[in-house]
Every structure is written in structure tokens, then in C-alpha cells.
Image (cartoon, rainbow, N blue to C red):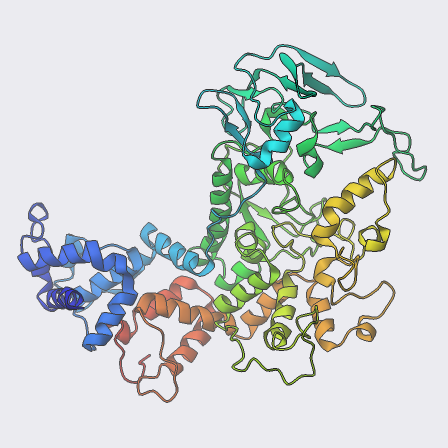
Length: 639
């Protein structure tokens, strides 16, 4: 505490002296004044990293409720709006002026430095980093197994079954020899299968070892890299054979594919155990070195770039929650077109959906040029309500908050400044159930969940544990009979093959498939708000679940429209920005001598009317209380 006091003392003493003595009088002889030198050291090394909240604490502790002089005011504006100290010339230019001119604030707000500050402000609210989000299973990750310079192969313990399907033993690596021999098939689909260079038996099990091939990978098409030949196989689908080795054919006479060979995809869960499947042309279905980190970074940048349009551009600020516009580039498009398909369904589900921004036929992962696109469009480019809404359905939000409850909770805490608080008493007087599967009916839990579940339902159009929309009822019907437990007698042959694959992967991921759960066969978000086809929702559901049922079909746009129209959004963002710039919370206690409730009402009403972020920033930094020491308040909350 003593060290802290002397640090504050040095800073406050520095702030009270003539500003011209505290800045370099000669740019080549900077900080020759000993107190200025000490203060510069403290400011750059300790005070700036600690941030405005520590300054607020210090100011409050020392009761520094006195106004800053014009030089100190300039310094504060520069630190808050540009994250750096003013230049020597800026201090000199202020000598002949009574105060910091509006033009200086305008220049700061127009600077690239402010753009970075605005981005950090929003990043602090939305936490867009996806570095801890795994976009696929290791069975689709290529690594240099055995050391640098050797061939790329599928790595990781989770990739063991894929390596085993190729070579008979997961620990066997391909040879550091060029693969030259291949078996070529054309019927029913083209295949080019490496012929092993070595084979042997190990306890009766055949072990196979191939060489490498040279491939120009999508992440760096300017060079060739070694890739184990099995991993480099280019087939995207393969024929299905029965246990006797016979080609399976569609046996359902009602199927348009009747009599045609049954084909299996190489990019679903079965693809990782299919020895005929590799990483596709140019390794397009596998994540190369650094690719996952690059996709994560691009998705986070996509969200922040859209916000930038509404903070620094001319787009209304509130429309960042509702716009159908989206920024995209080659890396994101490549991920959506190819890499997002390469996963098992116990990982993130990010497959392209109806209503997503259109993806060109040809995309390049190395193309980082940003382009605007439109969402909520059908295959012909016509408007269709699929549920997309501004930043709220971007992968940077959906993957950061992976359940509908967490998405709704973060939305509520950031954009309305309301928070869920557990009840004071663990006793619920009822009537309620201690074992209800529906948390809106479970004792104690219902206190929050009767509010949370209707909010979470707005994200029912988005996959949990992913970013793909699940609003296309041709793919995600509200009820799928084959996912109900009583339909479990499906076999592996004939027409049932695809259905079984659907059941074994999709059913437990998206539909209620546990016989002990309520409403088996129903799409999971609708589990407690399902209305059977042909029935009237109001006749089946109570008021709460009728509301949930309605919200599940809209996406989050109506929720965003509501808080924008009623002023909650603008009021919340005023509070966030005030805290960010002032280094303290706004005093909104109506009984406080320094209450700023009237100021909050005024700023919120103004902001709702002009809906312009930089205008609000300027309004706050021009307030009388901003010209006090950070964290200090002024009686009456002057406006």
C-alpha cells in the first residue's frame, strides 16, 4: 500500500505542475526534468497497463475531485481516445488556447488510433477470441509426423483410427519414399488407391506401408509438400460394400436412386474410418499447420469488422444487431465450403446453411480480401427469413457462446445490462417439481429459467455447439420418426444405409433420441414447446411455452428490435461507454448527492435518436465530470 501511495503521489504531483515543464521542451532532450522523467516512467510502465479502473480507485481514495487543467485534459483525451500520450507539438499548440478545442477531439475520433480503441471496447464486451474453440476433430488435422521435413500425415491420438484404417496399425508411418504405384478405379466413382510399398503380418493382422506424394496444399499453393499417399487420396465419396465385398445398391423402389450404387461421403463421421478416403484434392478437407488458428482469427475479425461499420462508418450503431450484411473473405469462404464439412458431429457443427452468404464456385484460402455479402437469401438470391441477425448469428458470436442459454445470457448482460441472480432462498414453495426435465417447471431453477428459456429460444435457429443454421425444415424437420427410440430396428443394408447413418450421427445431435426424455424424435430446441402437425399451438401449449414456440422460429432479430425500440440497448451502451471512458460506473442512485440518473436519461434519449457511436463518445468526453481526475464525481451529475 505504501508503494501504491508514493506512485499515486508522484503521478498527482506531476499532474499539478505546469504542463510545459512536464513534456519535452526539446524533442532531442526529452524528459530532462527529473519529476517528468519519473512520471513518464511510471505512466508508461505501470499506470497505463493498470488502466483507468486503478486510476479511478486512486482518485477516489485521494478525493481528487478537482478539475484538470487544459494540458492534463489533453493528456486524458489522448490516452482515452488514442491510447497514447499527446505529442510535444500538441502541448505547445495548446499554450495560446483557453481549453482543448473541439477540433482536437474530432481529429482524435477520426484517427486510426481511435478505431483500435473502439475495437478494444467492443472486444471487451463480446469476447470474440475463438482460440480455445476446436473447429474439428484431430482426425482431420495434418501434422509432420516423425519430424520436420517428413511427410504430412493425420496426427493425434484421435486420428489413430484413421491411420489404422489405412495401414492396419496406427503407429506405422508412411515411408520417406515417393509413391509411384496406384490402383485406379472408375466405377461407380473415380478412385486412385495407393498400392503399399511394404506389407507384412503382425499377429495375423496385415500391416501396409505406403510412400509419400507431392501436393500443392490449399494453404500455400506456391510450393509442394510431402504428404503420406493414403492421407492425400482425393476421393470425396466412395462406394459401399457388404461383408462379402459386393457393391451395395439402392433397393428402395420409391427412391430416385433405385438400383444405383450406394455411395458414402468422405467428410462425415464414417469418412475417418474409410480407408479409401483421404484429405481430398489439394488436401481441401483437412486442416494444415496453422490453418485452424487462421480461421479462428478471421472469424473473430469478421465480427469486429462488421461492428466497425457501425462505430466508425455511417451505418446506424444499433443495426449491428440486426443487419443482414456480412463481411467475408476467401479464408472464411474456404472454411465454409470445405473445412466446415470435415468434422464429426460430436464437434462444432458449422456446415453451410440456407440463408448464409453465397459462396463462389471457386474460393482461395489465401485470399484475405474482405468483401460485403448478404445473408437471409435463398439459392436464387431472394430475401428469406432464415434467422440471421447482425453480429448475433455470426460464428464469432455463436462459437464463442455455444449454447442458446449462454448466447441469450451474454446478450442480456451486454445489451440490456441485466443479470440473472440466484434466489436468496433455496426453498421453492411450489407448485413445482424437483425432477422436471423442463427447467421452467423445476423447483428453484424455474426462477431464472422462466425468463431465460424464452430468450434462449431466439437462438433456436442456430446449432448449439456450432454456427450453422438449423432453420431449414427440409433438413431439420421438427419431428423425425427415425430418431425416435422405437424406430431403433434399422439395419445396415440396402435403403436403410443412409437412414442408419443419419440416425447414428444426426439423431442424438439434433433430435431427442433418449427414450427416457420427453418428446422423443422432436428437434431438440422444440423439446418442451413442440406442436404436432395439424394442431393449434395455443391448444397444446401454455402461455410460457407458446412464447418459446414462437421465438424458436424467428431468430434473434425480434429480440434486438425490441430492446432498440424501447431504449434498453442505447441505455446499456451509454453505461458501458461511460464506464470505459470515465474509469468508473455512472452514479444512478436517485438518492445520491452526485446522482447522474438524469444525465443517463438524457444521454440515452439523445443516443437513441442519433444512433451514432462517435457522437456519443464526444458527448461523454465533453462532460464537465470528464475534466475531473479519473474516477472523481461532481455534485449533481452535470450534463
